[in-house]
Length: 159
Image (cartoon, rainbow, N blue to C red; front, side, top):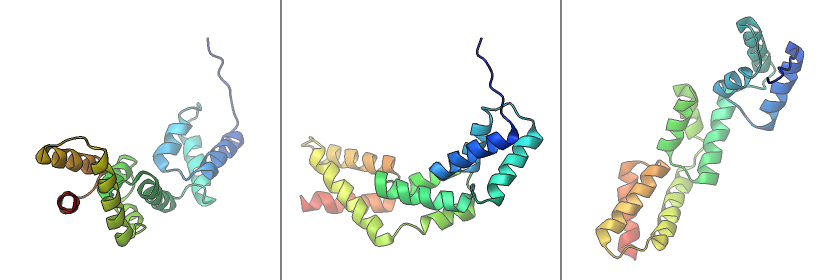
């Protein structure tokens, strides 16, 4: 049988403070982390309140850093970022605020860059199959349909 460790509320607060300092977290991640500890609802609420009051847990900051990071590191499009933030129960206001972190010029530059790069990797002589593969790739990345079709058209015409 697995031995259960018990922690005081203060110890759990410190653990969750370190968890939040390491990387910005959302409420859903904190709720999941709290399930590791055997706590009554009142204690959970007290801990979450403590994290909010001391600015360890800040949903606006989380959503902004999430959007910036996923766009700059993984080259995700706005649709994918919105979907992921909604999955984490982030409010509409915070999602809109987060999307303002993405520069429009950089956004267009990135979609063209990743489309060009992917186009070079596709070994498909048939024009329509190549176009479909590029389109599917950009849809998975989370870019908007109008932008995808325009980008794919321009990249394939350039070739």
